[in-house]
Amino acid sequence: MLKTIQIKDFALIENINLEFSPNLNIITGETGAGKSVIVDALMLALGDRGSADVVRKASKKAMIECVFILPVSHPIFKELVENDYDIFDNEVILRREISAKGVSRCFVNDTPVPVSTLKEFGDILVDFHGQHDHQILLNSKSHIGILDSSANFDGWLVKYNKQFSELKDLIIVYSYINKKGDELKHNSAQMQFELDEINKINPKENEEEELEEILRILENSELLLNLSNDVFSELYETETSAYGRLSKAARAIKQLAKIDSRFQVYIEESNSALIAVDEISKFTRDYSSSIEFDPEKAEELRERVTRLRGLRKKYGTLKHVLERKQLLERELSLVKDLDNDIEQQKKAIQQKKSQISDIVLKISDIRQKQAKLFSKELKTMLDLLGINKADFKVDFKYNESNSSDISDLSVRIDDVYYKLSSKGIDKVEFLISTNPGEPLKPLAKIASGGEISRVMLAIKSIVADSDDLPILVFDEIDTGISGRVAQIVGVEMRKLAEKHQIISITHLPQIAAMANRNIRVEKFERNGQSIISGRVLNIDDALEEVAKLISGSEITPAAMESARELQRAMN
Image (cartoon, rainbow, N blue to C red):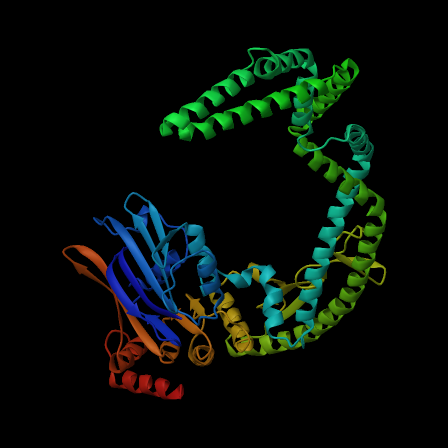
């Protein structure tokens, strides 16, 4: 429900704060007092277009703030959570500001949002009926949902939605593997050539670095032989070798240590040096004896390195080459199993479509039976609401598919293919004639705002138990009615307001008397400037307001008694 609305510096409104009843709220006032301005402000806060013209003269900006109280199960809270908006218990606060320069700022729970977000939330929260463009009823796409809300499908719609979702998933997979299969088949020769090229070289990770190390040794074998022989000769082989001179020095240190103990620690150091020289000498001797110069092996390695470098240049690194090899093997393996996979997927789709065709026929049959009951109830209700002898029909159409392609979202029924939607195969549109002898026409062709509002009131009364739209706003529901019909309209609004919050403007005492809360709008002049004010009426003031609608500005005792009678009638 809409709990409160605050309107500041909007049109002729200086500052208005209104608190609404969760049931029937009736706005009254003299002609030209500005009743519709309150509704205009509400619709602006719900995403309607606005400009700098709405800002009150000499003010910097207009501001409208609406506070809604909603059950936590309401779908709007899911939107708030998914988009990281602040959550204020069970409140949703929408605020719209428009500056004198025409700049618009919008907020949801104090978080800045684009005006399109306000519009999305507004369409979820409020169903508006009047001269504005929020008339859901005029959009034929909404008709099937309205009809369905009055029908008992006994779980068939739930079954269909599950099967329909599964069918879409199957078709997505089928289309993917079909497309992927075409690509793979088209590229399979190239992929096989590429894989053969890699397999022919058969690279190993880090192989290039290892081969370059071996090649570097082979290419420098003569130098390595000479240098290692020189090292062995200088350390061990010559008369003045390092090993011989160190041995002589070590013997001298031992003799020194016998005389002076301070040399004792260097005995071990000199022995270690001898060991190190001996080890280096033996390694270089063995190393030089193992060196062989093999030009053919060197050439083979050069060719191998060149091939590896070619692969690396093509793919980036040898690691990438190996990854590409694995991918090619997987893709080529897919090609082998592809025809079987596609055939299995086709069978799954055909089986799913067969199941769905049975379900949509059942759903369509339920809809058509319900359409007859719905039409009958609606015509009766419209007659009560003053649209006498109206004719109404739920028109069914079906989108036939020109294609039998397995990947189409369609089903075959009696050799005809029908396109599927989230609702099945049916397309529904409400047709109406409000004047005897006139042909049935789409609801959008109805010119009178009062008529379309009463049609909506009739529909909402029929589907009230199942319709979860929380707030209804009526701007001209009393157009062209009076007397007994007006009282019936008021009674029906009162009944409907037990399940939906209603905010309505009226000029009729029969409707105003049915209100759970009366709001009076007035226009007055201050310092040469017109100002619109609005206030919630107490019980006595509400009675006087109804009497004023009966007798005019001068309230007579008879008018007061009539007002009491009207209020008693609602009980």
